Length: 411
Length: 149
Image (tube, rainbow over all chains, first blue to last red; front, side, top):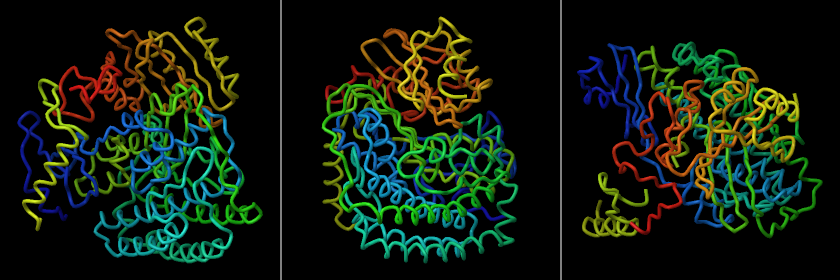
């Protein structure tokens, strides 16, 4: 079995338990974001896991209390770079619930199209990373290559490859003009063909079967106990999907089905994500068709102020249910804004999926929930650990960093 | 079972412990209840009625510390908020983490950011700022102002 040398170079014995601790992270080539998993191992078998987080905590919930409703959209969009529309989507749902606003159909279609395009590119990204975790870099190269046309579409529609700034209270900021529809349909056709190819390659590959079947199993009861959501839950036979259960935007206007699998292993999670991409393509095609009959430009209703009260907004992100709670006192900023990203509940399942497995299987089991650490946490200042006094402010930290860069211009 | 029936069942079960019922529409409802009864209520919702715990939100208001436990009825799309109000000094409430693991992290987070104590929590350590934040300083309380320090 191949273990990257980076891991074993820092092996150490824990005297209390006499188990070897293998740290994965906080900075590790297999992870795209900082997070520390401490694997307590007995020989090759993982017996316990401890998780340390906080490396990405930016205090977004607190920051949100000092921004106006329009600004919060840009803030929550920056929680996650991959599913950057799901947070504004859930936030819009929450605020529109408080203000009791119904957005125009054209805006509903556009919101849905953006969300589903995002699902396609996010799932392709995961399939690629999963291949990379397994040491199957061809899948990685393919999936990321086929993801590019989707990002190009985003650039055409919104002006950005990620962080689209499309949402506002009462509608969307930009229209998708009807003359762009044939271009989008053409790209979708290509994406579908490439997805066929990728799905065939992944589902029929004996290597992938050997590495993912029966690995990292989450039972139905585990999902219910941890409250896991999204493809993680659906791969264990728990058919929950906010798009179906609590329909929003254009989802009730189109036909599609919730993809589930029963096995709960890594393969089932891959299967659910791959098949979901076809549903997403179909949803977008139906939305585009629905848009053709709508008048161009009718993409928002004016919302003058947000009354006092609270709202709970939900949206189905590529990784599962995003939940936003917004409390308003009638002013132009939220009094309290609670955000629960799907990874917050999905990552916690590692206690069930990784324990008892070998070290090599633990990495793909950790990756199988498509963990998004920056979503899970949400530093601006440095405080003294013992007294709680502020040592450096954000501006001073930036000044220090600029100073350092000026001293070492080549680094 | 629709929203009205769900709320009626909870009322039948817990009677006067439910202090206030607010139904916004068929997909959103809030019950204000006595904080001391949170464990039996959550147990009933989770084990008997099969609701899913989404997350809990803590708020620091004039009334004290409020916690909203958000539950989801996935079959009907209902979000049921169970609201409790805890006193300003020594806010504490029974932990739900022995009932389901879904509340484990969020209770640690609320303890860390608001200073709410969760009784019988299996492991009430800091979640986000382990080892780099002062004890007894709660940044999400309204009396904490980062600019003043």
